[in-house]
Amino acid sequence: MSGQEEHKNPIPTVDTIIDNNSQVLFIKRSKEPFKGKMVLPGGFIKIGETAEEAAVREVKEETSLDIELDHILGVYSTPTRDPRGHIMSTVFIGKISSNSINREPKAGDGVTSTKWVNIKAIEQEDFGFDHKQILSDYGEWKESRQTFWSSRHSSKNN
Image (cartoon, rainbow, N blue to C red):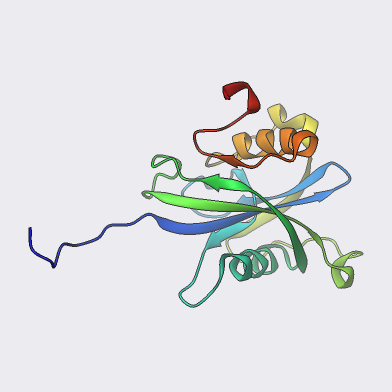
C-alpha cells in the first residue's frame, strides 16, 4: 500500500437530552432518514466547531431554546445506527438556560414539531435511530451516573 491510502472515518454528530422534570425534549424529523419519527435534538459537527458548540447550536436551530450542557451520557458508535453510514454521536445532557426557561420550544430546521416525552413512557413513542436505547440508558444514568457507549448499554452487561 502506498502512503496515499484513503481514510474513511465515521462522521461525528451530537445529540442532546434536555430533561425538565422527567420530561425529555424530542423533535419530529421532517426529512429522511426516519422522517416523522421522534429523535433527540442533534446533528452534524461542523469543521472548526467543538462537539459542545455543535450540541448547543443544534438545539437552538431545531427548538429555538438556549441550553447549558451539564454532562455526557456517552458515545454511540455502532456502525449501523444510522442508515446513511457510519455516524457516531456524542450524547450530552443539558438544561434550558435561564433566558429560555419560560419559553416553549418551537420547531425549527428540519423539524415538524417538538414534544416533551415522559422518561417512563418511552414504549408509547416511535423513535428514530437508536434514540429509544439512548433514552433507556439515560433513565439508568439518572440512578447510576455511569457513562455509556455502544457496547455498554446497561450495567447488566458488565
